[in-house]
Image 1 (tube, rainbow, N blue to C red):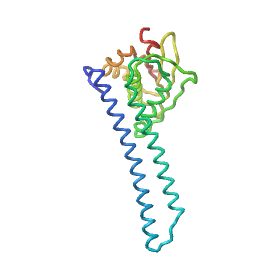
Image 2: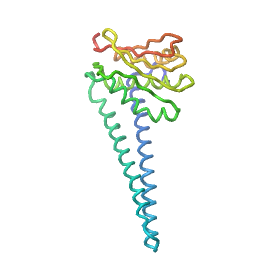
Image 3: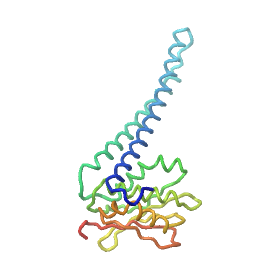
Image 4: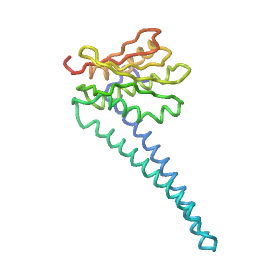
Length: 219
């Protein structure tokens, strides 16, 4: 975690850098698979030039693998583009659940590395809030990152959301120590939370913590 005297802007830069490093790693992985299969296709063609029968079935299989990776790369680049544009606007109205889902997608690599499953139990109806999209993504990621560090044995995080009065609450369940998460987030990211008037609510022993923030900045 960061020190308490680091600014929200610096916290945002760290978040931006970490996500882009993860995205570029994923792209390099897809390119490696494409390169490997292109090399195998080239080998098959060279073998055919030396008189070996041309195995069209094997070539077709390798081409299919290349196309799969191209499609995967397109999705990754699309996520990267959307993430980059999240800094375009300050406070705008968004569908909060869509942004939570997006941050979970961006965090899949981190979750997979820790063998963590993330289950979303979000409402089908949109939860509209007015907030700074990039800061909101950053806060959701910080909550998710902390949750992954304090998991119960089944290593499953469940994220739900609901409106209470004029505030929206995102509950992260499946954790072992909510109070430690509350302390870590309040020390490391208080300035960031203040920017969007968010806070952490935790009841010890509940196996969860809640991100609480206003539906509208003035509320």
